[in-house]
Each structure stands twice: as C-alpha cells, then as structure tokens.
Length: 497
Image (cartoon, rainbow, N blue to C red; front, side, top):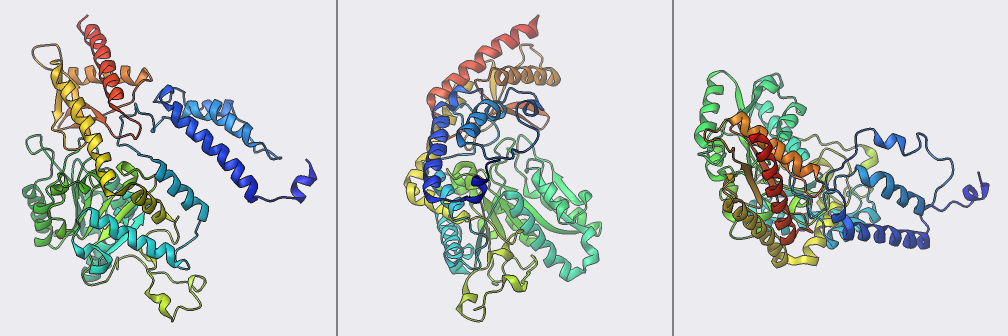
C-alpha cells in the first residue's frame, strides 16, 4: 500500500469534492436521460451480485471511475427503476430537480440534531405551517394555533408516534396493566404497516380490528361498521382507543369518510388519525380538498411528500391538533446532560426540540428538502403537477373503458386506475379470472417495458396502474396500453386452447 496516501489523507477537500460531485451529478443526469432504456423490473435472480463483486473490502482506495463503472455493470441490472416513465407499480416516488437540490443541501449540511441549530428547528416549523396552509388544515394544526407539525421519515414512524401518544393517554387513566385491553380500528384497506406499528407499541395482535369494506361502499370504512365494532368491544370489557382513516388506500385508492368517522371517534373518545400518505398531496387542489372535510375532528394527520410531491425519500409530514399545548405527551422526554445547551435557562427554551416528537434523537435536515421544493415550484406549479397526473390517469381509464375485454374494477379518485381482463367465458369463474389476470400481469412485467402490481379487494383480483412517475408522459401511457392489449390477446388465445 502507498503510505503517502495515508499520510496525506483529506476526506473532504473542497476542490476534489466539487470535481467528483459533478461527475456523480453527470452520472445521475445520464441515468435519468436513459432510464427508459432499462427493463423497468429487475431481471436478475437473487444472489447474482456475489459473483460480480469481491467478498472483502478493498485495502487501498479505488477511483470514482471504477466505482461508477461497477454501478453501471453490476448494480444497475439488480435495480427496479422507480424513476422510469414506465413504472406504474405501488405509488410513485416522485423526483425533481428542486427535490434533488434540496437533498444535496440536506446531505451537505449533515446536521446531527436540531437542538443547537435554530435554523433547522425554525425552518421545520415554518415549512410544516406552509404545508398545513396549502392543505387548508384548521388553524389548530398550525404552530400559531398551538398545533404541532413535525417531519418524520415515514408514515410508519408517524403511526408509531401517534399510537404511543394515544396509548399513554389512556393507560394513565386505566393503569398500565390495562394495555392488553386496548383496541385499534381500521379498514381492511388500510396499509398493513399500521398492524405492524400496533404490535410495536405493545398492543396485542388480537386487538387490531381490520373492519370489512364493500364494493357498494367504495371500499371505504362506514361509520356504522366502526361504531358496531366499538360497541361490541366495550361490551366485552375492552378499551377502544385509536382509529385510523385513510385518504387514498394502497390497494384501490379508496377514501374513508373523514367527517363521519371523526364524529364516531369523538363520541367514544378515541384518538383519530388520518393517513393521507398518497391522497394528501392531491388535496392542495381545491377539487380534491373535500376528501379532507372533517379533518378538524382528527387528533393527528399525516401525508408523505416523497410519494407525489416531487420530494425525495424520505419525508413524511405529521401534524397533531393540540389545543392544550401538550404536544405528543405520550412520547418519552429524554434529556441527558450531553444534550443540554449551556444556555438552557435562556431564550433557547423557546426553540422547538423535535427530538421529543419522534423516535430517533436526531434526524437529517428534512425541512430544507421540502422548503426548496415548495419555493422552486410554488403552489400553482405543484397543483399543475398533480392535475397532469390525474389527467393521464383519466385518459388511461378511458382507454380501458373502450376495450370491451376489460373493465374498471374500482372507481378512480386520484391517479390510480384499477382494472382487469374479463374472462372470455359467458359464466365468469372468479378463480379462472384471477389466473387470467395473473398471467397478463406476468407477461407485461416480464417484457421489461412496464411494471405494475396487483391487488385483491372483496375477493376480486385486479391490476393496478398508478400514474405519477415524474418522467411519465402521454406517450408512455399509450405504449403501456398497447402492451397490455397485445399481451391480453396472447393470454386469451392461450386460455381458450
């Protein structure tokens, strides 16, 4: 090994930093330019990478050129390209130039915590108030109205924090031995992460109520279903304490009736959380804001800008309506000596200490990411972005409707289209139709030209087309539909033989 390398080691030399960063930016820019050329879904088999890369770390430094070359030849084949314009699976992880700039600033400053950086804490308060105003949340969710907004890494973390807070409030009244009696309610369309979070805060899995929804009800949780479940649990000696409503479910994009569920929650004194991870972004547009009617009944509300708001992963907004100014009082407040400021008896106490509003004691400078996105685009452009995706989804939905071999399974609310290929037999067999659509989805994804996933609601298997990737344009939607039609013809032909 060359000893001169270790004797003159400067891991953050400004000139090298600038030159090498530009090379990486050029590499990423080239990736975005050519991402459409890659198979959307990774085509490799698990375990492929161990045959391509060394099984031990290098002793000496390697050049950036060699590293980027290995990324191209070894890493790229094992990536599913979420930024491809032909990515229509899950929900989008949108990106933007502004989002990338914010990500660079966030990483560049690399703050360890916000307690000693007033700008970080105050910018977080500011940007959360901006978002709340864009969503027209009640003043009681804003800092000026004794509300509280905090940036989390994910919806799961937001759920854990609100569950822990709600749990603590109840257990202080009934005693900590009563934790086995606490009950959580959600619909069968609620994201599965909630059940995981429920178990993480110590609630027995058997006390999670996954309440049924129906096609006739738009797969929304009805207040009657919720109230019946609550009454039944009370009669059994259990303690209902938390209910989660969703604005834009993952499976089919359903929206729970916030106003009605909120009234039931208040009647029985349950903590009411609204998960708008996906649909929340759309609610900055007046035509979608009605999905949040009744939000004033909620104790907490969350949405994820990293899904549809042109902000890079990870970034989740969580607000707590907090008229008594006892923000997140259920979370432990830990203040070791090494986290105390020398001037803790001065005006610094007026600065929000976000470590007590989240799981980790520190976090990245998330606020600057969202702040840059909002400033560079502005509300008008962000609304245009949402409406453009919804327009493309509406167009795809119309293409499905024109082909009598297909049907839309669930009415579209945002930019998610749920459809399926109908059986060619006069009497439909549910299992046969499921196999038919499984084969269709497999053929589409195997082609490498597009990627979608399926869902099952009320026993019906269907294909999800989630439009929203930043680079997706009308031509990609048209190409997707032609691919689906081509593969459908093949699948139907094979099924009839």
